[in-house]
Length: 293
Ligand code: G4P
Image (cartoon, rainbow, N blue to C red):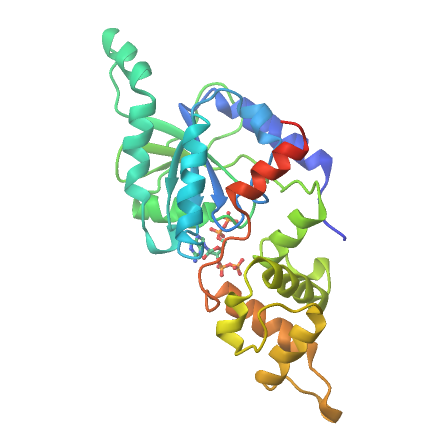
């Protein structure tokens, strides 16, 4: 699998994040609710350390509601703030400021005691590409987006984005590439469109996707493509059936795998297969157990 990930770039971004941390009260880490494991850069935890952090589970409109609720509870149990949002349709965004305020209550109380009371909360938004950072920032800032100017501590100008309440946002300073520790991370990022389809040819990618759904929950495919079986020993046979049922046929009755791949991904990404979460809390706990954490 060929992935454009350069350790040098990652280091630069991490250095920038580290430098900008002093400028903010709190961090909002956006992840894709469909793939909370793969859309989270693990290296960032070392950099953010104990900085108050809100895990922002975005794209909730595309993820399974039950699983999202479990992720929310999981992050809360680990001491993070956590919210579920759908940045595209402006859902859940209003919960962020009050939560941040609650999490920073001690800090604000201290400021008040020194007569330095301020309602403004500065939040750095971090996340790998495609989790919805721009959508989120554009939606919460509406037209109030404004450059506030330089802040002490960084040499280059930092762009602060104002929102409708007293929240000021700072976008990720650099590109936070995902980290590919295993093949599944790369596959899940590709399935969701976070990395473009060229990392693997789309027919192979679709095969892997269909294979995963066959094992995870065949009903997702069964309902959409009128499938006959409850489980397919041979994933290619399953792919063929989708092709036949959808008229993805070439001359001489051969299956048009390219067409099958495109229609399946199109359905997935337009939520026509339903709301699917590909990575659950149980999956993470299994991995942690295997790693002895
Ligand atoms: P980024 O800045 O983190 O890179 O992400 P960006 O906001 O550009 O969002 C990436 C894609 O995800 C966009 O789709 C955007 O509309 C979509 N998106 C963001 N938030 C949500 C959400 O809550 N729900 C849904 N359903 N979609 C969301 P796009 O413009 O079609 O881009 P692409 O898919 O072609 O990359």
